[in-house]
Each structure stands twice: as C-alpha cells, then as structure tokens.
Amino acid sequence: MDVLARLGIDAQALPDQWAANVQPGRTLITDGDGPAYVIAATVKRLDTAIRRYQQEVLSQMYLSEAQWCQVHLTSSRCEKFDRHRVLAVKPYQGQRKSKDKPPLLEPLREALTLPQNWLPEFTVELHRDIEADDAMIIEAHRLEDKGVIRSDDKDLRCTPWLYHCTSLEQVQGAMPIGYIDEAFTPAGHRKMVGQGPLFFWLQMLMGDSADNVQGLLKLDGKACGMVGAFHALREMNTVSEAANFVIDAYRKIEQNVIAEGWLLHLLRSRDDNFWKYAHSCGLSQINQEYMQWCAKQKWRMLPHERRDFENGKWTSEVYEV
Image (cartoon, rainbow, N blue to C red; front, side, top):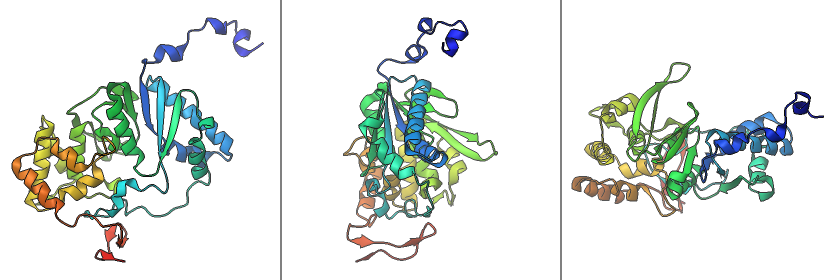
C-alpha cells in the first residue's frame, strides 16, 4: 500500500494540477546555463545531474504555465556572434578570468543535447555560433505571444514579448515599448529593472558590467552610469524617442554607437544586427547619417587581426598577424 492509500486518499481521483495550470500552446524559452552550473557544482554523478536538470526544467515550466519548453545553452567554444572582435571602449567580457569550473559542467551540457536525456515536454540546444541569449530572443520573436522568456540574466529583459520575472515568479505580458524602473537588491544595492525596447536603450546608456560593455562615456559632460541613464529615459513614451535620444548622445561626443550596440543588441532573427534594429526605430536624418559615419570607422577586427587586453582594458593597438 502506498503513502496516499494509507492516508485514505484515492490518487486516481486527484485533479491533474499540471494540466490545470498550463496555458495551451505556450512554450517556455529558458536560459539553461545557470541551472547547469548550479547542478554540476552540487552533485557528483552525471546521471544524477541529468535527473536534477530535468526536474528543474519541469519546475520552471509549471511556474510559467507552459506546455512545452526550449532550453538554450551556450557552448564553451561559442563564437558569440563575433562580439569578441568588436573594438568598443572595452573588450567584450574582457574582465572574465579563467577559473575552475565544476568538473561535471561540460559533460552535463553535452549530455543534455542528446535526445535520450530530454523529456517529452522539452528539448535542449547547445549554441556554438550565437549566444543562448540571442537564440532565445529569436525564438521569442518567432513564437510571439506563444513564447515566454525566462532567465536570471537581465539582458533578456529587452524582449517585447512575454517575460517571466524570476524575482516575482510572474509572467508579464508583451510590451512593444516597455518600461524601466529602479530597484534594490537584498543587500541594498541599486539596480535597474524593466522590460522591452526601453530597457535595451537604457543599457545603451548605462552599459553592462557583467559583459564588460561601457555604454555611453559621457552624458551632458558627466559620466552617465545607471542613475543618469534612468533619469534621462524614464519619461520616454516611444521607442523612436528613446533611440534618437541615445544616438544623439553618442553623436555629440563622437563615440561609435555601432560598436557598443553590436555588443548589447540581441538578435531578432539569424540575419539581424544592431544596424538593422536601430534603423527600425525611426531614426532622424542626422542620426541615420551618424550611423553611416560610425560604420565607416574601424569598429571591429578582421578575422586575420588580433588584439590584446588585460584586466578588461585594451593594452595595445590592434595589429595584423
């Protein structure tokens, strides 16, 4: 006799809580790298790690009321849309130092790509050319209101489609324009939250310290930062207004907006890029001309070139090899 029977409960008569919670046709688009790292660091066997990962995906699906799930992973050898060749103010992810990773991490990620380790509700893809973040936004645009982005990485807040806010465990609706706001961590540190295109243009001003992206160097003669960026954009009501304000600010100090934008923009399709996205935002004539000027500058390396950086900064000029 099982536990439920001993308690006098007829398991067959219980309602299917999973089915009652599902939005038919909804697909969760989830960032799989974070859970892979945590699980690989806390178990010793690969088969145990796979089971834990399956449980984690099902839990996320339940919280997102999803019928299906796509898990996206970034390969350790990923080309990352060639972002490392972009000559922005700082080298992309240049502050990240090699450190010991859980021994099970790479075996787990590779194992998760095998269909025999999936469940009927989900699939897994390990990306080697673009980052998982790019692939997730591409899928969000493909699925539109049938897809839900979920990630602890704030970069994914740029989606104009449904977004699962992990701090609230709540699915937020589509936001073609979006919003930005201030918040604080449990330790009292200020952070920026938001969703949609407005959050992307906020990042274009304040940068992204996690990926070593500077953003705008100066706004009205002062270092911009997150507070200055927030106050500059918080009253914006359209994407065009925000885009033109940001590119105006880059133009005034002759900082190459394409370099920073190439690092921060997440792809909407396989043939997308920051140039195409910016021009879809209703740029003024002067800003279209500035984009053309930026494109003619030396803003990324050719495949046969190399660069050096140390502690997140350039240490030498770009030179050929």
